[in-house]
Length: 180
Ligand SMILES: [Zn+2]
Ligand SMILES: [Zn+2]
Image (cartoon, rainbow, N blue to C red; front, top):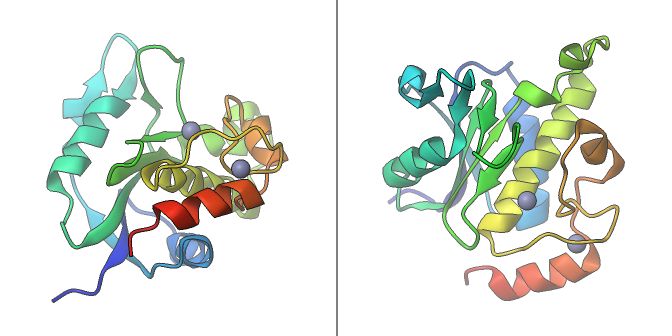
């Protein structure tokens, strides 16, 4: 039997060490081991030509349907620009109290905003998005503590202003929601 873990599934290549550093941070916060897998899906199926972006709801459902029952939670990570109909773009999303989330690196890159690339900042941002979406999957809603990772983020600056950790209130809530 496979050891139960939070599973990160990468769709597309990520630099060596990039996801494993994020995995370490996830384990510190959620107290589960993390496994990393790479998978392939035909992304063109999820492309919306009118918006020239990828449909996050469809991607989330796809990953939810194909995720292993052994996984405590599954988070799919992408490079492509994702959206849901009511927003211009999103960094990620998850089923509240569900099993699955997704996150994308696309909107987190300095280059997109005309700033010099910075891999450390990129990693820090992506870790926050992933930890945030996993928080939703563990039943946490948005938090109003400015430093809390569960603060809702609309812009990249919002992500930079919060920390990658849960505030004490969210930590307390999480311990009630964690599966035994
Ligand atoms: Zn959220
Ligand atoms: Zn909080």
